[in-house]
Figure 1 (cartoon, rainbow, N blue to C red):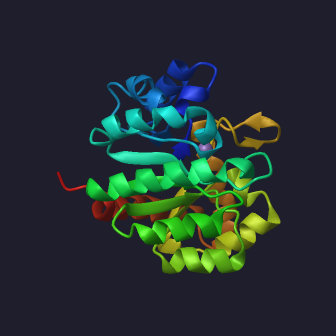
Figure 2 (figure 1 turned 90 degrees about the horizontal axis):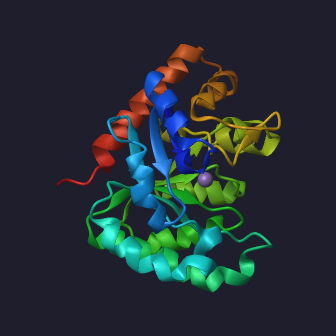
Amino acid sequence: MIDMHCHLDLFPDPEKVANDCKDRKLCILSVTTTPKAWIGTKNLAKGNQKIKTSLGFHPQLAHERCAELEVFDELLSKSEFIGEIGLDGGKKFQSHSKVQKHIFSHILRNVQKDGGRIMSIHSQHAATAVLNELKQYPDAGIPILHWFTGSASELKQAVSQGCWFSVGPAMLASQKGRELFLNMPHDRILTETDGPFAMVNNRPLMPWDVELVFSPIANLWQMDINVVKQKVISNFHKLLKVGRKNE
Ligand code: MN
């Protein structure tokens, strides 16, 4: 199983979670929210090839952590994956849209210059703005829109721009999430939890709870659950093949 977006470093006992992931042979993209968190979070993945740690700069922290952009630039060449990056146009954050945009476009420009990466992207209340930004940097790599919550027309636009999508149990728990999901191309779907932020039944999702997403997908696609699992695995391998930076 594959959790393409979780915050390993933000669980109360990250080392225990990392060990449990190893026992369960889970593949994880362990995303960070600040550039400074990358090295410590990467250490959690020591001795486990199945955990990849991505260098991120969460848009909700853009205004507080602006000075860390330098750290991002220093670490960029060492990080095979990028995220969580993006824009957040929610009520609490819209007043910081300028600094968010500054950071997001700076990152995309430098990632493009450095050959492109697979990127996990936050686009809450800002899907159009994110897509416009991505359009400016067509060689920045492969954008994976995580937990997409935009409109149907924004989704169409995202598909036409080559975006991938990572979907989790929390997203498919809502009617709107399920409707969007049905319009996403099957061959660009990946699975995620967004734990510990995302919750199901009032508890934070653990990386292995990614299992919970397969039954709703199987229902929506009207496919056998094992076929769905195989499809996600083959998507994942395809993504690595087309999206990995050639060293
Ligand atoms: Mn997240």
